[in-house]
Length: 394
Image 1: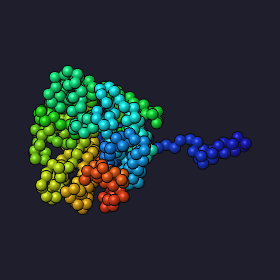
Image 2: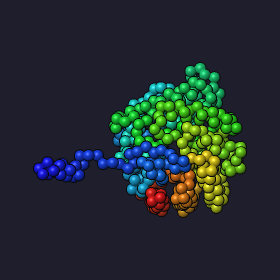
Image 3: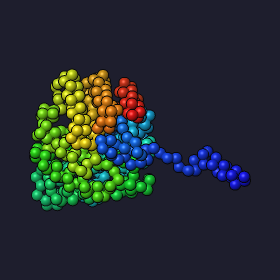
């Protein structure tokens, strides 16, 4: 009897003082099963946001409260996934200052972002390089190779030059094997990270046939998986089709990618789509843009479901307030959110959407017209919270 009393007392201590860790439902790795994302054995649907700026801001410890505030705002509105940059190549505040040379203070900023995401129960999609010159991008890699005597003539040599590809592979390995200075967990072992992204919005205008980027993904995706077999991987595509379905692209644009063949590569776990009708169809009416958007979103859901047979995540979408009002932007959010929910609620391929972009209050220098600031944009915030609630109940 005395032994039972002691055991009961110990149990009370555990319950009252948290001696044993509580199981966090977000602690598992996100996986795939058919056209579904899965978390701890259950389908996972994610409403989320982009915040490319987080690592750049977290470089300065005195500014890290902005990262925490953004995550807190996100959590309070049911957002469970964030996409941000895990790169800054050359230039101001570099993560990688030259090939193989890394800035520890910038890495500590990334450590903080990942640890804060875990604190607030938010999964991360981390992109590894930019297609554009912002934060270095493929241009910086090519410039580095040119400085070493390589005969490179175009930024698109990023996808083909062996030295450049070696630089990129080394960067993959360095980032994935980084041990977080705050949590002690290697990035490749941290379930806070949902997925890696090979490159933000890859484009290769010098080869619109798509062969160059297809070969690059075919090489880089298995390489990344050889280092990290626990996390999901996506390309970073905008969703543009190749020649076989060029008519579905806005203004029949071709950029050397193909939504279908790129995502059929076995090491790619899920498809991604971006949606910026205001940029892609400049000068067109709001009605025309919404009509295009509806077709764009539905086409990609159907192709992910019927041809690719993988989940599809809408990883960027938005409408600039510089050229439209809140009501027009809210209508775009409603259109995308309702279409995602309709698919997800029926077991379809759409698994969520991430708007561009979430800012904390006071980040005026980072405003780009697409920003959502929770304390300022009440109608948009209501739509975001409603979508979060609906997806969480599926």
